[in-house]
Image 1: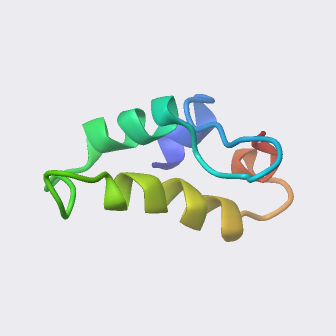
Image 2: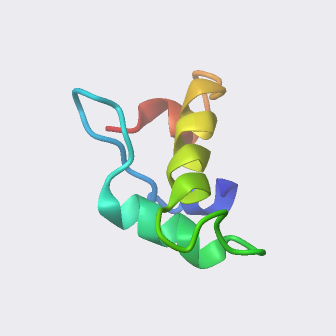
Image 3: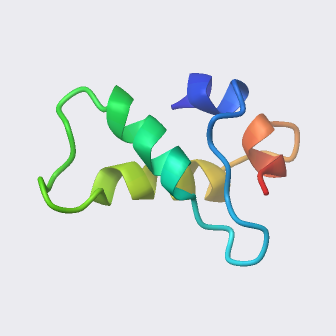
Length: 65
């Protein structure tokens, strides 16, 4: 996840600060055990949100948008 963040592949929307479809797809590709559900990208959506909420001001995740 941190490598995706550092590479700039995790982007969140400006207003809602939620990950876009491309970010969710990028995370889904690197999830080791796959996602919880075959029908929805639950973990792939949650990981960018968790990284963003826990980012320090100096981390690449702090400047998403």
